Image 1: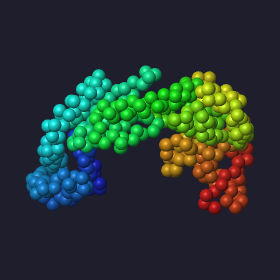
Image 2: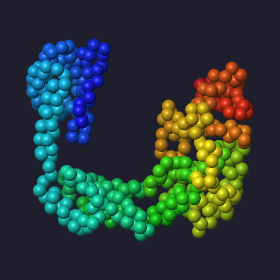
Image 3: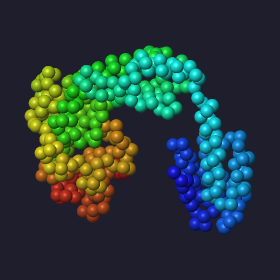
Image 4: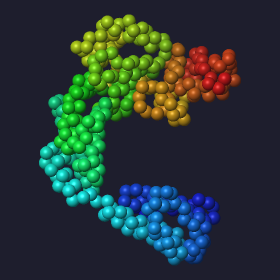
Length: 375
């Protein structure tokens, strides 16, 4: 990719430069750039600590290239050449010891080459494929330090609970793979339960559930939903539940959940138990109107408020979700409290008592109130 030169002022005497190189993007600024065909003798180069560290010891060479360049583009290409040489030399110096390659091949023989699906060009990381007892494919990512095998590799996989490898100090790749295979078998029941959830109901969140996700937000219809947090080690037990929506709709469901837990039968899957306790059938994505399922804020038309870093729901994503709903059961539009607050403040008929604003729903004019955080 070509370098990108971004002017920082109207007279084009200062530029911010983005220089893509070896999969990274280096950035720096140049000031006092002359107009016309003058040399860059008086130009000043400003770079961050990373680039300054790479260029340490060759500052005189960079300054010489700067003095001899007739324009900014020429200098940027000269600097790119210098950086390529330095990075190439650093890469050669950082190559692992010869024993590293023999140990790696020996470890791969022990694991089985048929499990290897990807290997980095510099041999710093690799991916193994393993299958569980239900035939699910799992990818295990392993990073190899230059000091391998004396230095412990790090590993990760898409599991609901990370695997602790601290007890495997000095372990081989086969030991690490075996540890993950054991962990994967531990979550067979969890994945069976979550696959049943994903296939039977309308999952609003996450958009694309992974095998590590223990959270689901399930549509109930009428702009209402249920969030569940499932214990991966006991997936058939009662999950942590939270209802979202109009009180007229969700209050009876809360009461049914609290009073009907005696109906919970761990021989059944999660959705079957929830339907029995809540005395309902969850709507599916195939047979329900999208508008009825929507949980987007009725004012900003977004699900997550972009200006709020807090996340009150049980998911890992950032941004607050609609937390105020119109109490009119025929409307039941959801809103972010911040959006509703701003809307009510813009309406002249809104009245305030202490820290609560009273007004009307933007859709149905039903009375609605929201607490002001600003008094």
